[in-house]
Length: 93
Image (spheres, rainbow, N blue to C red):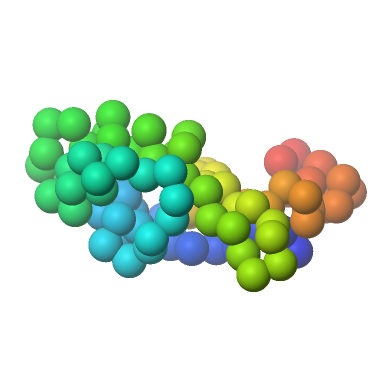
């Protein structure tokens, strides 16, 4: 779907946040949150850090479009400017 790209499959389960922190350099993520996530799900603040990252992480592509994280099992990069209305309704229904 244009404007919605799968980043990490839900097959990775509780390690999705760690995989994201290890492999993606998005804007808006504090070094503290990144360090916590890289520590893995055993860290006591892992899920709080992930909540912060989901709500603040951004990536601006070469065309100036801003991408955000969206998680529904799988982790997606979502650019809401690129998702046409019909497909957006279909995706969320």
